[in-house]
Length: 435
Image (cartoon, rainbow, N blue to C red; front, side, top):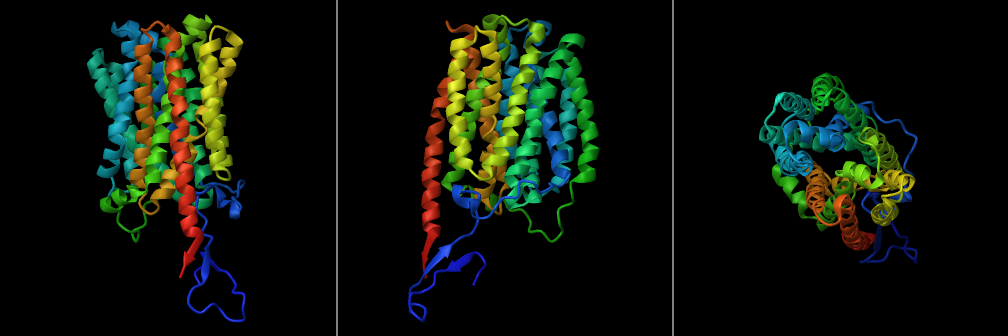
C-alpha cells in the first residue's frame, strides 16, 4: 500500500470483492485542507534563503525607487512627471516579457549561474542609467535590467521552494519575497533620501556595486544542481501549464499588483498635492508603506501555509477598502499615513501564497510557472501604473491613481472564487477513488 493512501476498512471479515473505496490523503498545498499534517513554523530555514532574499531586495529597490524620486528625474531629464513614470512602466513590461523568455533561455543552465549572470546584467544596466542623459536610452536600459530581474526572481523562487521543501515552501517564499518588501522599508526610502541629497543617479550607482557584490554571495551559497537530477524539459514546463488553476493564480497575481501598485507608483503626487506633505518627507511615508509590506509578506507566508484562502480573501477585501479610504481621506495626514501602511500590509500579503500555489500546481516542472507568476504580477503593475498615469491628467488629479487601484481591486474576487471552486473539484476527485 502506497504511503499516500489509506484503505477504508470493509464492514465484513473480508475486503469487498471487486470495488473498494480508497481515501487519498496526500498532502498538497493547493487545497486549504492541507493542514492534516502540521506545518513546522519554527523550523530553521537554510541560509541560502536569506541570500536569495538579499538579491530580491536589490530587485525590489530598483523597481520602485523611481516612485520616490520622480520629480528629481523629471527635472533633470526635462520630461514631465507622468513621462518619468514610464521608467516604472517600462521596467514592468520588461519583467512581463523577459521573465518567461529568460526562464526558457536559461532552463538548461545551472541555477546558480543564472542567478549570478542576472546580477551582472543588472549591475551593467544600472551603471549605464547612471551615466546616460538620453531618456530613450534610460528607458532601454530599464527594460534590459528588467530582463535580468525577471530571470533572477523566477529562478530564486524555484530554488527557495525546492531547498525548503513542501512543508516550508510558503514560509521560504515569504522570506524571499520579503526581500522585495524590505526594499520598500529600507531601499526605496533610503534611495529617495540619497536621490534628493546627491542626485537621482547616486542610488543607481549604489545598486550596481551591490549587485556585483551579490554575485560572489550567490556563487558561494547556492548549491550546484545535482548531476543525477533529471534534465529540465521545455515540453514538461509547457505541459505543467495545462492546469486551469495556474492561470487563475496568474489572474489573481495581476489584479493584486495592479490595484495596490497603481496607487503606490504615484504616491508622491498624492502626498504632496492632496495631503500637503513636503517633498522631503515623502520617503518617510514610503517607509511606512514598506514596513506594512514587509510585515504583510512574512505574515502572509506563515499564515498562508495553514489557511491560504483565508488570507487571500481577507487581503482582497481589505485592499479594496483601504484604497476606497485613500480616495476619500487623502487630504487628512494621519488617515493617509495609516491607510498607506495598511495598503502595504494587505496588498503584499498574498504574493508568497500565489507563487507557492503556482509552483505547487506545476509540480515537477515549476520554473516556467514561477516565471509567469512574476510576469503576471508585472502585468498588473504595468497596466495599473499605465492607467494611473493617464488618470493624473483627468479631473481626479492626484486622486486618480487611487481610484484606478480601487476599481481593479474589486475584480480580485473573480479569480479567487473560481480558484476555490476548481480546488474543491480537484479535491473531490482525489477524495474517493474507485478501484
